[in-house]
Image (cartoon, rainbow over all chains, first blue to last red):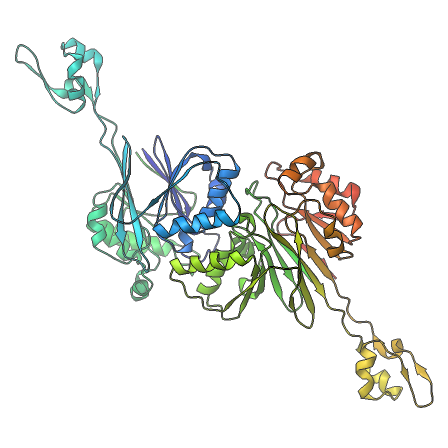
Length: 301
Length: 301
C-alpha cells in the first residue's frame, strides 16, 4: 500500500486558497514529505497528517514554493519535543540555509537532523521494504524528481500445507522466493501448492518542476502513479518552455510514453480559479488522470 | 486614522487554526507589515490586504514565528511584478538570510528591496505624517518593538472667515500652528475664530516578544493602542520568565503603568483552544483590553 496526500498543488504564488507544493507519501511503515511549500505544517494539521510521523523530507529544488515551509515545520517539530532522527534530502545549499536560520534564532533542535545532499542520480535511501531514488529533471535551477519503489515482497509459506508435503523448514526461504520443492521420491511440489501470493509492491514517481523532457520517461517507466507538473494549459507551450514548466498535454505525453498506470497533475498556474480545463486537456491524451487536489488521498493498493 | 488588522496571533507552533505573528497597520497614506510569520501572504489574501500596498515591513526579531513568511511574500511580490520600492527593517543578519535564499533560487526581484538594519533604538522612518521608531525589548535573542506615531497635524484655516477679519495670507502658516492674530487696530482675533481643529493624531506601539520589562513603559507611554504579548496565563509567571515571555497580568500592568488608552494582547500559547481566560485575566487589571483575534481590525480614529 502507498497513500499519497496532496497538501499543496499551486505554482509559485498562492491563489484561490491553493497552496504551494507539498505532498505526503505514506507506506505501511513510514511517512515521507515531498517538498514543503509555505504553510505545509498548517496543511498537515488541516488534513490530519501528524508532523511527528514524518521520517524523511525530500526537497526537489530551491525555488521557494517548494521549501519555504520547511523551517517552520522543522522548528515546530523541535518545539513539540521530537526525538526521532529526521532525514532531509535536498540541494547541498539547503543545509547552510537551514543551519544559518537556526543559528540566528539561537535554536537547538530536540532531534538529530541528518542532511543528505542531492548531487547525483541514484538510490538515496533504502530499507527492507522500499528503495527511494532521485533523478534529474530540467528546470531553471537544478531540480530532482523522486522515485519511491516498494521492494518485491516474498511469497508467504502455508506452513500446514508445506508440512503435509514433508518440506523441511530449511527450504522455506527458497519457497518464499518462488522455488518448487522436489522430494526424496523425485516428485515436484509446485510452489503455488504451498505458498500464497505476496502482497503486491507499488511505485510512485514525483517528477517535480520540469520542462517536457523525454529523459524522464525511462526514469518513471511503468510506475503505478506518476505526478507530473502541468503548470500551463496546452495553448501555452511556448510560455511553459520559457519558464521551464510543462503543459497538460506534455504531462500526459510523458505518462503515455512511460506507460504509467495513473497520472496526477498539479502545480497549477495562479491565473486559474477552476481546474476543469486542466483535467479535460490531460485526459484527452491520457485518460487515467486526476487533479492533485489539496486534501485528496490517492491510495495505491 | 490608524487601522490595525491582525493576521496571526499565536505563539511559535501554529494551533487551532491560529497563525504565527503578523499585523498590518494602515494609515491614510501607507500600509505597513509588522512581523511576518509563516502563512502571512495567505492570511493577507483571506483578509483582503493587498500585498502590493505594503511599503515597509518591520521584523521584530529572528525567531521563525515572526519572519518565516517573509521570503514567500517577497517572492510573490516580485512574481506579481511589483515595481515600487520596499523597505525592510530587521536584524542585520536578516539581510544575508534573505539574499542567500534569492541567490540559490537564481531570483531577480522586480523591485528594489531596501534593507534597514536595526541596531539602536530611535527613529527608523519618518515622513510628513508619521514617525516610526524602534525600541529594545528583552527576549531570548535581540528583539525590537516599534512605535508608530502620527505627527501633530496643522489647524486648517477657514479662508472665508480669515478674509472677513482681513488677516493677510502671509499669516496663515502661523494660524495653522494655533497663533492668534493682532490686527492694525490692536484687536486680537482668537485663533479658534478663523481655524478648525486638525484631525487628531494617533499612535500605536507594538512591543513584540518580551519578558515583563518596566523599561517598556516610557517607550509606549500614553499611546492610543498598545500591543503587548501575553503568551501565558497569570499562573505561569515563572514559565513566562524562563521562556522570555509575559503573562496576561504582566501585559496589563505595563498598559496600566504606561497609561495607554487601549491594550491588545496576543502571541497566545498553542496549548489553549479558547482564549476567554486570557481576556478575563487581563481585563481584571486593565479593563480596556481586547484579544488580537485574527481578521479583527482595530481602528483608532
